[in-house]
Length: 436
Image (cartoon, rainbow, N blue to C red; front, side, top):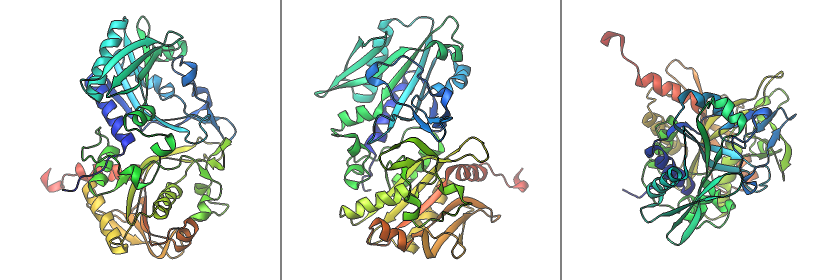
């Protein structure tokens, strides 16, 4: 069997999540909690060292923000499973990072009657040994404001394993700590991955080019038991490579991909950043623009074949004063000498079947309804009752291909993930009436 690839960033995150869980932490959230928070919840759960502070990225009129702290808005829910150890994984945002504002992090809560320094040294040793091997050497040091930093030395490389600080008074109140000590642990997955895999910049860390995406040959499964992890493992097994697309879009991105943008269509008017990042001004409502940019980058780099996917949050503006809507979406794209519209349809059929949705049906898109696709090759995903499953796929529009500079026919699929989860669960749990 041909060796598969693993995103270096994802592989490092998987190793760290596994290490925390094996050392007593409950994985409370794995990238599913909302990334948009009410501005009042955009606070830090512990006193970070100044070097680790993040600039809040406000949205629209300032009522909402992209989270800069993974735990702050989740603390009331985490309270229910304490005292003990809880860890979460996900994306946070830093408006001070104009190039790559998104950062993958782990954050954990550890509560106990007392947490002396020897306990921290023991925890750091165990996590480092699990994630980086028995030769990892760890030292705990103070870094100001009472915070602790665990430094790892392994294979001639040195990096911070985690920073930890006492939960702020607000965080303690939300956690109902009472007489318990409450500490927050933060792991900068981006920084560790860059050091471990000798990645020189965050631009390369998030590069969509196959040279970066296929650098790590690894057929080990992604860590976790969520449906998103299961989908990623299926796609990797089918030869797709995971990428991390743009987290903000230019104003004309939807026109570039030939998508409808009528005045009534709010789906393609993204939530706006109060302070744009260069030419990037709005949050993604769909993953198509980032997917087509990634395919274009690979075509221009001379890659003859490309198969990529992304699972990520998308954001829709609230209507009539309502809160924004946030969903998880799955994007897949491909081009190559052995990829045509028949092969792409077979690929979609194989993915849905492997994911557990046997009752799936493909209905041609009505003419003119979806100009982002080729007029003769666009499909809707339906169930056995002909109910739309919020997914579509097909050949990318010739206009979009020309606008992006893709010199061959390319293919894509855009799927909201919740309907796929629901349908797969329905079929998995189905028992025929005659067998009941």
